[in-house]
Amino acid sequence: MRLHSISESIDTSKYKEGMKIRMSKLLRLAVAGAAIAAPLYSQALPVYESNQVALYIQGYLEVNQVNIEGDTVMADGPSRLGFNLDVPAYYDWNVGFNVEWGLRAVSPNQQLDISGDQQASPGERQAPLYVRQGHVYAKHALWGDFAAGKQWAVYYDVAGITDWYNVSGGLASGAYALGGDGGITGTGRADAALTWRKDWEALGGTFQVGLQRAAHVANLNIEVEGVAGDDTLLVCPPGDCEYGLARGISLTYKANLGDGLFLGTAYQRTNLDISTDDGLVYDISDPFDPVLIQDDYVIRASSNDFAFIGGIAYGKGAFQKGLYAAFNWHRSHNNELAPPGSTMGATNFFNAIGSESFVSYTWGAHNCYSVYGGHNLLKSHNDKIFHEALITGDMYRLAKYYLGFQYLWNERVRVYFEGAADDSNEVAAQDNGFASVGIRVDI
Image 1 (cartoon, rainbow, N blue to C red):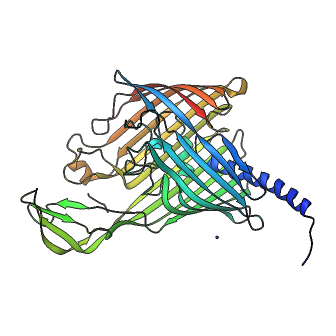
Image 2 (cartoon, helix red, strand yellow):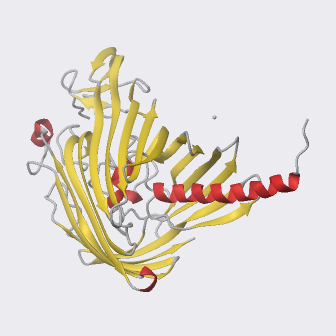
Image 3 (spheres, helix red, strand yellow):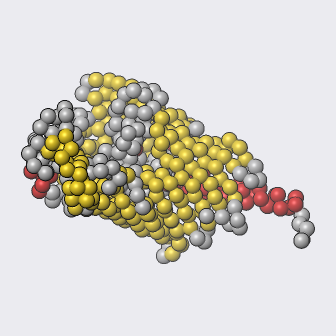
């Protein structure tokens, strides 16, 4: 592993009626807020409602028939199942929780990830059921929205504008980092995060600021050969090396211009604390019988992981009537991971620049027809050490170009075709593109 750098009588009937009205209004706001935060969510059904609490279920099942280089497989899309429990609390506060699981129901033992949104956290990648989100929240019209737990990052407030492909995409915005769901880095579905979002109406539109913090996300398991001499293995003791303090910010503006103009930027930074006075050194002359020869090796290699993104979008929204066009660009440091076996030694983190686009045009009765397309482009950038460590080629370059058609059968069922051409270099190439037909059924 290489690192760069929360006694008066009253008319109870009126009180209860008021509670019903208030509950209904707040629930609509809560569900709408959840839908905005998570792309591809479009439906939510009430399971239980009372004056004190409401429980909603949301999600969908998606199945794709994918052809890659002549081989055809049936595979899961980014299917998910979630629950939202909402409680009107003190005065105008709305409190509740969201939990969501990703589903691999069609081919639970098959690993075919061609979309960032399908990624699970490390250690969950083969599980047929894995956690996508799990957080509590408190919302207030004046004080803003607070949330704690695994949730969409403030970084994703910007990155999400292009993450609308049915099958692939989300590969070049820096959101789904380190080959996972962006939980550790706090850029995608952030782990153990505290967030606050607040918006203001001004200048003919809506400004929103988002803040995010996490004190500790994950331990770093570091093993490096040859650093302490020939035939040696250096190991950082468990708990000493970690992804430590993480913080992020997003600023967005939605202007009431035409069908709507969106401008946004976000920044996320996570400390990589690679520091210990108790490093373990093993003699691995016999790789089957390593021998501990030192337990006080000093490691001082702390660095950071950061990602910056800017984005612009125009239109009512993806697959909404008329034109929707979105573009984002990002730059990152230690936020991307090269494919296994593509580098010599442990030099697999790299700095990157990337861009994504998504364009859709929707027409017809009930907005049922849509054509869409765009690109994902991710390249290693200004990273001499990484480039020298590559076994093949002189850089990492992932390039995919998409074209698709979607038919909205009704408000809960859509069918689509999506194809992609792959122009990646040998280091980043996953395939020569794909063609897929699929169906998605919403709850």
